Image (cartoon, rainbow, N blue to C red; front, side, top):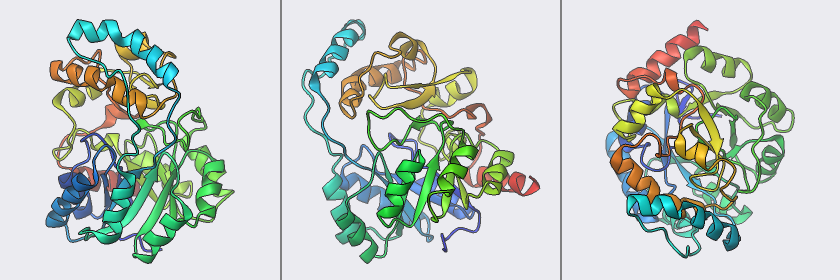
Length: 341
């Protein structure tokens, strides 16, 4: 299968602003494959990002979608709100008392990809689940190839049965949200290289390795383990084209430990350990995106203060290896290192 890259490195879609059209174009320009993050954007915002990317690169690129799940039980969300109220009062913010259903503009995004002005989108990847069979068929008919993100052999079987073109195998070392297909699922702990082997036993599809790949040696190990490419997110957070905040960039080198927590969004996500994750360890319900919306005012206030003790600072286990410079140069350096083994 022709993925359109000359260098088998993929810029992971990082929702919330870290992924930018400039980052996608820079990685494309170095021979890799860039992905835009459509999560947390409406369809219009996604289309605008696609247009900006197309202005900067003539090579194909991808777009990542969040697959909506069923609404969560409001009771545990309300209880978590009560727990957070003292912090909200301390920082002068209001927490939403009611959270309406949120499908992340899923239907409108699919319609835009199928019928709107979206030139250059060669790939659509899915996080947090799988689309319906009719949706897969429609995108395939439109000439768009599809990637499923999986965290277990069971999820890989389901994605393969659906007829997707390739899989992103996300190991526990990955920064940001674990891509479990259900919010309530506890993510596995099998290290990436072992997970690749386990997934390979259940699917013939091409596998892209993701999770904790911070240098060329790690990339080479993933390719040696059978992956056709390596997907990197945290490795690009300090680059010139990243949309990460100055505080987030600083935290990547100042803070040491990471942890997997539901405290910020209700889904397991790997973040730099700080006072907020410690304070609410094990207290947040498995309720996404309800907890995401609940904590948004707190997270926004922490970001304005550049308060590393309270911000959500997504980071993979190799965060200390993240490099400054242009994303194109980082891509080239990583590939040169990988070729050296």
